[in-house]
Image 1: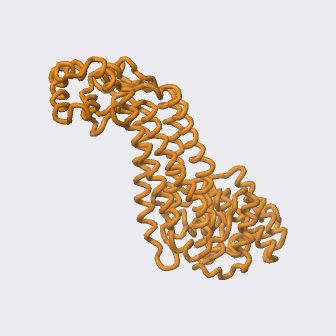
Image 2 (image 1 turned 90 degrees about the vertical axis):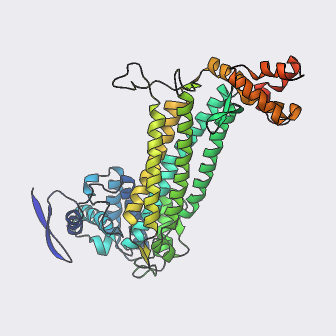
Image 3 (image 1 turned 30 degrees about the vertical axis):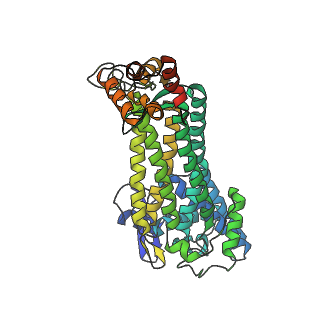
Length: 458
C-alpha cells in the first residue's frame, strides 16, 4: 500500500496515500482493531453538521478567518452530500470520549479544506476551534438520535398506526374468541384487538415525542469539562443558531453543560422508550404468530401472507417469517438498552467514557425499530386474511360464554354448565337449555357473542 508521512503531537506516522484522514485517525485504526464495527453514517453526518455550524459560529465571532471557515463549511457539506464512509474507519470500541472519531472528522475536513483553500487548515486549531471531543460527541449523539427519530422511526411508526387503522375499518366488526393465559375467554372483536395494539403504539409515540424536546438542548460549548474553556462566551448560542438555520429544528444550548457532558441520562431515557416500543412490537408480533398458528392444529384465526417456503424438509410448510424476524429485532433492541444502561453509568466525574458504544447502540435501535414497523405494516398486517368460518365455529363452542349467565343463574351453576359443555363437546346454549329454566330466546340474547363484546350487565 502506498503511504505518505503525517505528523501529530506524538510524532510521524505512515498513512495511506489516498486517505483524507491524518495521523491521529491512523493511530486509532492501529490501536483499536477490536470489532470491525464503525460508527453509523448518521452519526458521522451529525458530527459534520456540528463542524459546519461551529465554523460558521467562530467566523461570526471573529475567531476564524472567513476563507478558512467557508472552506471548512464547504468540505462538511460535500461530505454530507456524499459521505465517503471509507474515510471514517475508527472502531466503535475506542477511547470512551470518542476523541478518535472527533479527530477523524476534523482531519478529513482539514484535508478537504486545505485542498480547496490552497493553504494549511489545522484539524485542531481551525476545524476543532472552540470545541472538545467531550462536547462534540455528546452533541452528536443527541443530534443523530433526534434526526433518526424525526426522519426514520416516527414516520414508520405513523405508517404502522395508519395500516392498523385501515385494517380495523375492514375487519373490526368480526368477533373472535378472546384469550387470557392462552386459554379461551370472553369474546372480543378484531376492532378491539387492533385498537389495543394502536393504543400501545400511540403511547409509544407520545413518549418518544416527549424525548425530542430534551434532545434539542445541546451541550456544545461546554468543551473539556463543562466550563466552556477555550470557547467564546457566545459560541454556544451562535452555534445553535447556525445549526437551527441549517437543519430547521429549534436547537438551544443546554441549561447545564456539566449535565450534558458528564451524564448520558438523555440517551438512557430514550433507550428506555425504544425498549418499550420493542416490547410492544414483540407483543403484536407474537399475537400475530399465535392467531396464524395452524393451519389445522393451531388457532388458525388468520392467515398471514405466504412469503417464502417454510421448511427445507417439509413441503408446503409456510411460516410467519416477518413476525418472527421482528421479534428477534426487538430482542436486539432490548439487549442494546442493557448496553446503554451500563454505559450510562460510566459518567465518571466530568465525562462519560462510553460514548461511542452508546451512539452505536442507540442509532441501531432506532433503525431496527423503524424497519420493524415498516415490515409489520406492509408484510404482515396489511395482507392477513381472517378465517371467518373457523373463528365462528370456535366462538359458539366456547364454554366461557357461560360467564354471561352469572348474573342470572349464579357462578356455581354457570360453572357446572361450562364443564358439561366442554366435556361433552356441546355448546353452552344446548346445555343451558337442559340445566336452566331459561328459554332458547332468552339464552340466545344472553349468549350473543357480539353483544358480549360490548361489556356491561345482561
